[in-house]
Image (spheres, rainbow, N blue to C red):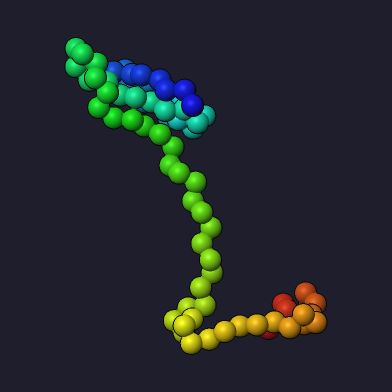
Length: 80
């Protein structure tokens, strides 16, 4: 992952370019002052992990099991 350094003024004037850099998987380090010390790091958010589906309010009281031979056609499933 490549890190691009920008001063606050550069970051303000090239904001769209900074976002494009981050969207490509790189980081943008924002520096401040004469010493150009890093004060912020702009990165993309971490990938969200899919969560397990919960049964809802009674999940601690219920169990759902399907037998191995249970079958349902798409037409049966979609009937209302």
